[in-house]
Amino acid sequence: MKGLIILGSPRKGGNTEIILNTIREGMIAKSCDVETIRLNELNLLPCQSCGGCDKTGKCVLKDDMREVYSKIDKSDVVIIGSPIYFYGVTAQAKAFIDRTQAMWARKYRLKQSPPHKNGNRCGYLVCIAATKGKKIFDGAIMTVQYGFDAMDIEYCGEFLVRGIDSKGAINSKQEDLIRAFEFGKDICMR
Image 1: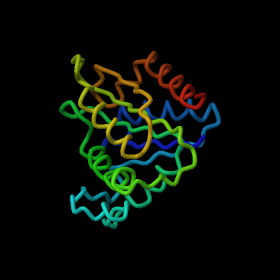
Image 2 (image 1 turned 90 degrees about the horizontal axis):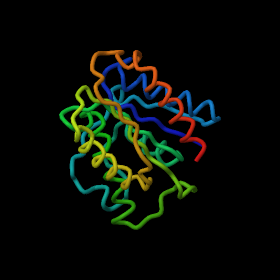
Image 3 (image 1 turned 30 degrees about the horizontal axis):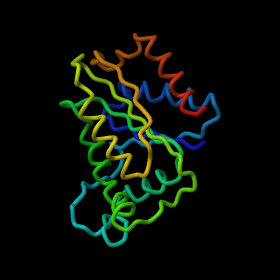
Image 4 (image 1 turned 45 degrees about the vertical axis):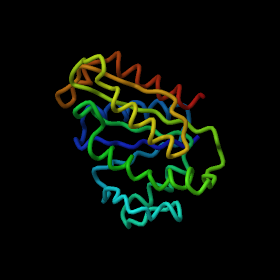
């Protein structure tokens, strides 16, 4: 099984990255091949709403997203990880999701089958929020669900942690780290 982790946090070594790395370790423990992409290190332009992808199913922008499209298409599991910023995903994660418009055009406008062979692909959201609000994750979940739909990936669930703010604070939450490792193992056993 091939997994792709999309890290939407701009903070290196932050709580989201720590949780994603723990999930990755769980996946590797079950023999999954996993790659992590750090969005903040890519040259990723925002969608220009130019309509160019409506004709070809391919984005006309020439940036690092071209390589990411290929990696998404080759993955059985895609995980999008982001801290919560104002009840949503980070700007980096949102720009990435907006750029899946080309995949949406391929699927819905052009009615093209995606190039991957396995039609049973799963997508997951991993989010950490500083506050504990009841609806703190709602905006991020909805955004990511629609992004996965564009990618022709079934939304299969989420891993959410509330009340974690300062850098590295998740390291003191051993139960969440254990849960993350098990979550990674479970992803690869489906």
